[in-house]
Image (cartoon, rainbow, N blue to C red; front, side):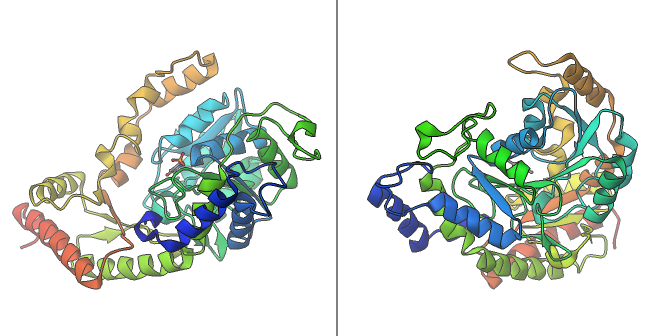
Amino acid sequence: MPGFELFGEEERKEVNDVMQTGILMRYGFDGPRKGIWKSKELEAAICQRTGSKYAQLVSSGTAALTTAFAALGIGVDDEVIMPSFTFVASFEAVMSVGAIPVLVDVDETLTMNPEAVKKAITPKTKCVMPVHMCGSMADLDALQNICKEHNLILLEDACQSFGATYKGKHLGSIGDAGTFSFDFVKTVTCAEGGAVITNKESVYINSDGYSDHGHDHLGVDRGADLHPFVGYNFRISELHAAVGLAQIRKLDQFLAIQRKNHQQLKNILSQVPEISFRSIPDPAGDSCTFLSWFLPTEALAKAVVNEMKSQNILAGNFYWFDNNWHYIRKWDHLKNATFLNNISEAQKQGLQAIKNSSYTASDLVIGRCFSTAISLSWTEEQVKEKGEKMLNAVRKVLSKQGVTA
Ligand SMILES: *Cc1c(COP(=O)(O)O)cnc(C)c1O
């Protein structure tokens, strides 16, 4: 990760195809576009890759989540169960449709703990949203069973995990719908973009209309389209889709490089018995965008952060516990319900409940966790050098603290 590390002639060619006709919009202009439909082509490629029946491209992963919620009929006063460790976009999208985020603890999979999900279910629960963080997956069998038993919608936030699978099925294709992000730092990137995938025709038709002002796309031209419901503009442009198309064709190459570098780095870190690794429900399906690893205690992890900082090797090693974007601990704007506009009473109460909760089980996991971003451009020599520097920093801290001799 990320795909921009391997931009080349292929991306330029796809963009040039679009510039040749000048039709930058994905809908309409059937004559002048001379058969160039990059967004449609990318949607077909996403369906083929994920095994999903339908894909709707949108302008971002956040827009994909918002579109998916609306398409699934999730809105005011509905509770959505989601993990305490994710990117802020997950709760932004829940709030944007008027629904109430209910945060639950994560476990060593770095995704939601199914037992915590069970405990959080109330009569108002409508949806369970696992987030497949850092390129790997949640325990989908367990979550699917819970959703079936309680008649809940399963929406997979797979924004960080394009290319990853669970028991042979692509992440995002297992629940009622799934979302991807193609923003600038994701595995496949087109600068800004996202997608909703689903096997349900109604969810697809809703996503298609919702992301384009409610257009039904059945008219002879845009002016003749009907508006069966109210939508918004979350359209992707043909320029972005063109870049995405070149990138998705390189996905297998990206995954092969990531898996190789991931394995090499893991082998190096495995030399320290005090280091353990993220538990992965289906290791074969890991997209290996990150190597996530744990130290025995939060104190040791913090000492390693400081040691890495002092050696100038922290870059690319994410210590999420202190991160503004990804972990509940620093989401003060959410906990304090700091919104520019009015939110509902039920949402205010939901956020108050989050503020009053402690996420001790999550703290015990995230406080000890590092995720090392796996670059597509590393040479074998560079992985070795990087791994050994990390190893030395960890060993130095452990011996200073008397954990090992
Ligand atoms: C990146 C990301 C998003 C949002 O994607 P954007 O395209 O940046 O809007 C949503 N959820 C998760 C888990 C993400 O990592």
